[in-house]
Image (cartoon, rainbow, N blue to C red; front, side):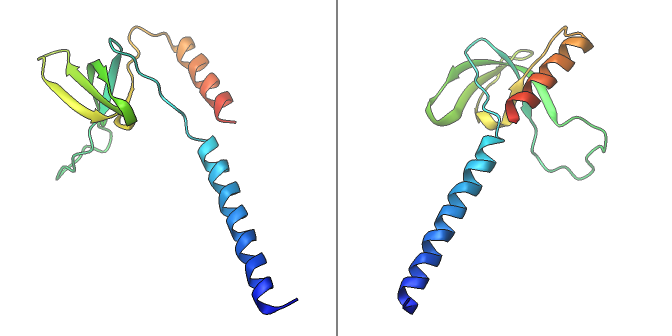
Length: 115
């Protein structure tokens, strides 16, 4: 076996390892689907001088107005009516009037989907 052929085999093997690793990590990502009219919470990523240690970083609720291609969304603040265009990865569904038992069912379902 020549040096060039062994190097080509090594590079081919590295490519397959990268593909398998990517598939493994992509499988763990939870896809979120939002429709217009849904209520959502927005992740507040602004760096503050003295962020509260126990303060929630999720603000809202907001209402989804429009879903754009590639995951962008237009949302409206329910309280004052301001509109924002944000990345969908910064949103999560807003659960209102949900009992503790229903939350456990949703968490169990999401953990089941991730495996």
